[in-house]
Amino acid sequence: MKSDSQNGFTLLELLIIIAIVAVIGVVSFSYSFGSRRGQALRSATRSVVAVLRDTQTRAVGQEAGVSWGVRFSNPSGGGFDQYEVFTGAVYDADTVMQVYSFRSTGVAFSSPASGAVTDVVFSPLSGRVTSPVFVVLTISGESATGEVSVNALGQVSGEVVGN
Image (cartoon, rainbow, N blue to C red; front, side, top):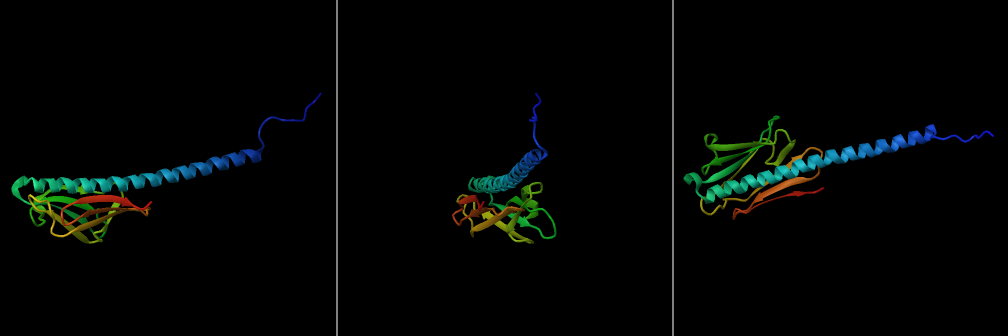
């Protein structure tokens, strides 16, 4: 006796399975890529906060007997955003102790604006600043921002907002 039933999948069933696997792959890749950008933004925000707190500690401890500060630079014309730790009450390129850059992360400042700089100088002993500072970090393709602030008392805080 001969049976007409065949084992296996039809071409239509195979095409549907391939389409489902492709959709799952694209969605997971997109999520993974977005997650990496978000992680880079969170990491950059934490790094800026850590550098500010370390710089404030140096000022309070009167390391080198002077004020300590951080300059945030957002160059216009395609340069990489960076921040520099310096000594003294006023920024001077000759007193820069350390330079940090977002070169490989894609993170950039939206505040200070393009072509601008923002300085935060911590007073010796008290660690206070003369005026509050607010720095905003962004990354391409993310709606979230990293917000770092230093209030007049010198309290440093940072968080990622959005997403």
